[in-house]
Image (cartoon, rainbow, N blue to C red; front, side, top):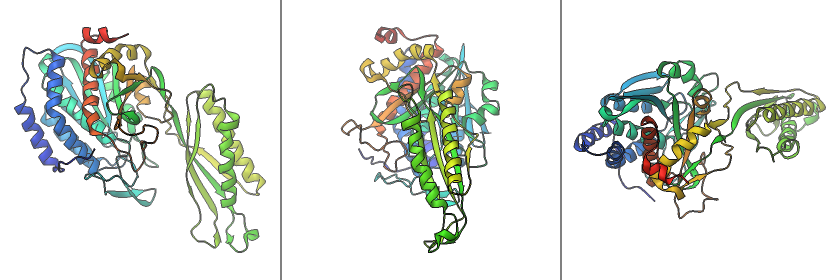
Length: 451
């Protein structure tokens, strides 16, 4: 599927969206859910235009200046109370309903990845930035552009019915989900640290993520643990520089690093009981040396560890540290192993909340299209919200149904493709979950759909 509409300027988007809002009145005699659905249906062309604009203008973590400006200006335009600058570039919009009810939070992330896009969509990203001292392409290779756009649509739809809305909705547009740059803080943990939850005190937080490998419009969920805890690590192997023609004159950290990489593959395959929980140890980058005939002084490796249980994580970390230290020592040198302090915990969906919202999801797409998923070794810093407040996080499939789900490019791939036909599903699902929760339970239609 290839879109054909041109990308508008940001100002044109805001103006056109406001005009659309004014041109789409809601009927007073309609049920609240129906009014919101009608408004979202009218907003779908605008949501897609926002998405394409954000996709063509991606920004890395803690650098979402343009994105957050567009979001904040739009939320102000539709009458929300707006706070900017939280966690550096985050935006929070508060909508107070005209009727009493609970406070909930809806979250979308805004940042992109250091990936050079290889898709052929007309709104492909050609942006570049500096990442780890290198010039890199920048791409919304994980779909955060769709998350931001859908939540903007939900905010406008709710604003249109604010007098009938029971309770308060806090719209959280979060930066740096993919991790803050080295030496910086960011993301959900920083938003919490700066008082987001203390200030608004939501009794539930909801979020979604578009997901490759699930057919477009299908919803995936899991109660309890859903996504893995993630740790970033750094290994530095010390060597002694020498001429490449005389390797015996120094200590070669490249060879030692290759031995470490090979040994790390045995941590999960031979030292972890993967029948209990899955685990992953990955080396993501190796850097060392600058010339073909020079043995360098050191080699740096960075990577990730994914686990679902604290004792399992501790065992893996201990095994890696032992391997790194002993392999280096056996080669006559030293190596260091460090865990980044900014680790993500496991994303855990509150089991009771999960059961409560399933009828809402089934009402949107039908019971057959709401399916449980296995544990996901991807990670999400939504986990920090879920540690503090009962939360529910779910997936919306974005792989066209005529594609092979097993071979479709994954999230974080330069070929990642989000089928825009899934955006209405995501927006409607988030709206339904929120409205039903605010109303104090699920609708009769939703309850009837529950097996």
